[in-house]
Amino acid sequence: MSHAALMHRASPSSSHGLDGFEYRVFRIERWICVLSLLVMLLTVSISVATRYFNLGLPNVAEWAIVAMSPLTFIGAAMCTYAQSHIAVDVVKLMPNAAIRRAARGVVALCLLGFAGVYAWIGALFFIDMKQSGERMLDMGTPVVVPVFFLMLGMLLMLLHAAVELWRVLTNRLPIDEESLT
Image 1 (cartoon, helix red, strand yellow):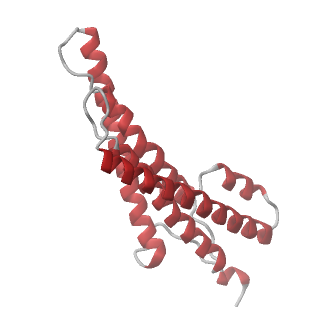
Image 2 (spheres, rainbow, N blue to C red; image 1 turned 90 degrees about the vertical axis):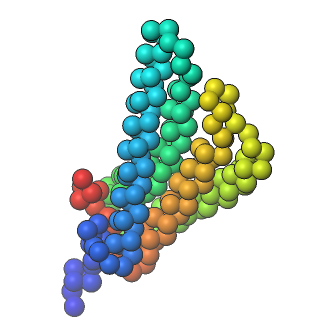
Image 3 (cartoon, rainbow, N blue to C red; image 1 turned 180 degrees about the horizontal axis):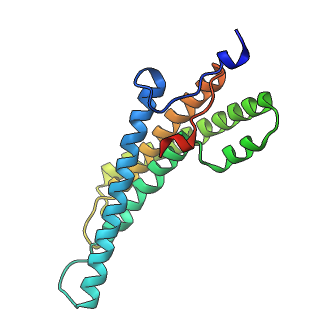
């Protein structure tokens, strides 16, 4: 069997196995980010209109700030899945396939370490905020909400990095970012 026959392109449209599961997780992540952007757009627009027309509405811009948390941390997990972070750009420039594969493995291991540390910190912070019941000033939004998305985003990044490491170890090609659009 040729080397090309041993290689398997991780297909986002796979409906089975780890590739299919990871793609379904990615689709959920994408919707969370879309909803976050929608919340940001609506709440900032309401806040601007409230100030411009001197309306007596509360400052809902706090929710835009909270919506940045899922956009940032779930979005970072999406970048890990889509292979669209800076380390992947460097890996793609390497001329030798074996070196590229080794570099992908190193990147996946580094992402596992990074996401593991921040998932742990996020979990501790989440527990602390849940116990304290701390709230934001304007709308009284619980601080636990954005902290939850920090923790969730890092757990999702752990998942994507672990699956990418599996792809490296089983000699599979990475997800092709262009195939996700």
